[in-house]
Length: 168
Image 1 (cartoon, rainbow, N blue to C red):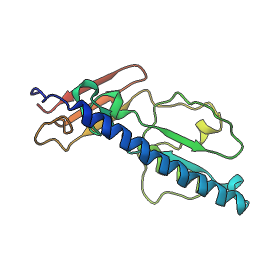
Image 2: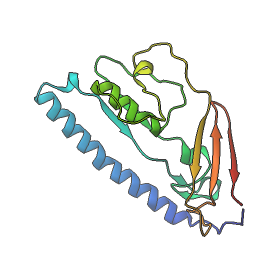
Image 3: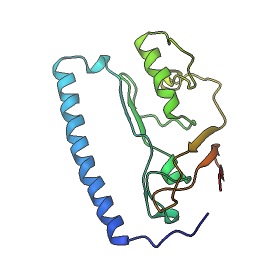
Image 4: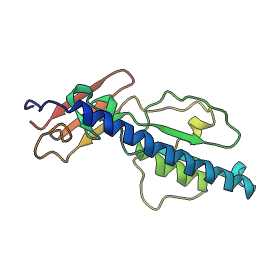
């Protein structure tokens, strides 16, 4: 991997502050949605999924932005409001590929095509299920390598480790 240019610390601080401000607007929006669901008396029949596509490096490992092979970019928040369940933390490897099968199961629907992911409903309901030991990550947008654009890579993530190989 080629050497990365020095990061602009003041820009990183400004980016972090901007993200926090944007998150306050998201908090306000979610509060109004929940209030509306309560007012219509359907919150107890509603599952709300909070997630993002990937996280953001603020200079960690000399990367900035959303694309890097480190946990700071690859681990993302996933919060699910599930009526009747309290705040449990599930220590399983899950990915965005699990969202569609979860929604399909919650809706009582049947997928029209095969699904790569696994429904999270059994985990949310506290059932003992056989689960994956590893998950695959990939970035294929390479091109010019910069602090916000790493070379193409593949990663395998287990509960404790990540192994990454670059195209370079």
